[in-house]
Image (cartoon, rainbow, N blue to C red; front, side, top):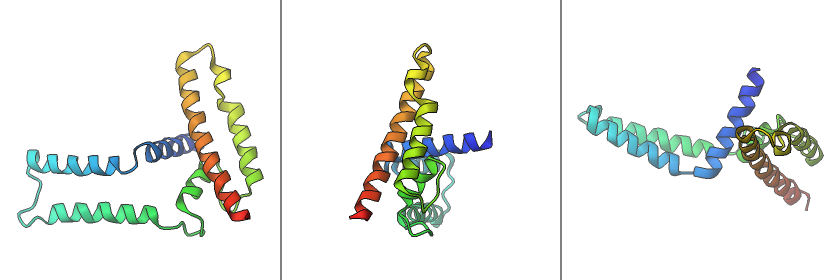
Length: 142
């Protein structure tokens, strides 16, 4: 069950990162500013604001660094979405995608509108991840 939650979390995280990009960072910065005004959490010397900016900068830098495996972080995240790790071949990715399509394809949920909509969103995430992985593997092969 925890594996299912982990995979759903990876799907959600990939979807949020893809859809919103830096929008979340800007919103978080604005929320920090608002909290400072409302709750007065800013220290007198301004070090709290500087610390938060450094934390955000560190997080952005960490996200842009390659994964320790040598693969780009996006590729590693997309492989994780399919419950794979590097090095994985494109054929393994295709098999994993087909497995997920069988499980989440929207045609299975035609009679339940909520599940139908959710499955469509999940399939969009899987398809986007698969397309990125396919382009990555094709660019490496030549």
